[in-house]
Length: 324
Image (cartoon, rainbow, N blue to C red; front, side, top):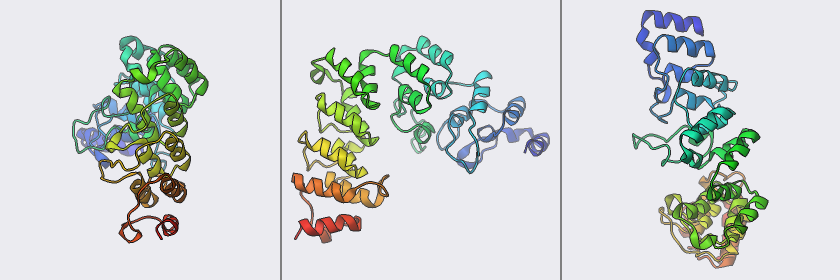
């Protein structure tokens, strides 16, 4: 509604800095290059950050996640803002398929190739905020390499792999389930399990959190410690149980994890399965009944049926057979 926008700005130029939903500015909502250009000409701040995600307009635009508001992709507007000098990062450059900009970030800061969607790289100035908009649009822990694959930018993916140190290449091979590359890299680091850093170890529970069974299998076979804790002090087994991913649960059980470890929420892997069956991210698709059965068969201890506060009917049916 460019004409109506012009009317508002003519009456009160300060509206270009107004705050709307989640503290976004008009530029965050720009649906066309024409609107974005007009707002900038009238003094809109190109790198204004919203209040919910503390992210810039260009960061919001690299992938559309609210189709009801934006019926089409807004990468053309993001590219316009990049051309006008907005702040960029290697994740944005990768999503936009801008190889020269990716190369510039790597040339300017070689450590940028290690960037991930997490609070270390995108800290929250306001602890009450929801975290970077990259979390919902890319996914937590996503890397430039993974985003290049997500968006189909194979040339950028090859560039990133060619310019990555060995440990990053190994991690990406894990994350992407590239067993051939993983085995080749592992052959050059036969003592890998003894030299893992804390960040290396953390990749295992993070992969489980991302429901990436292929990566979990590769890392466990390479010697990653099976009970390494990730976010919320959850182990890979607890994440697999929370997702109802019975394939991943069986894979982890082959490596003899401790079944009764509790996470930050004071529940075990079995408790994660109980809770996840009703509240988990994959409660509609996860096989929680089979997950619970696998854990019980492995020796997990269950409370009495009447003491379990909430779980699905399918899980209760399994428990009724095991807790007679």
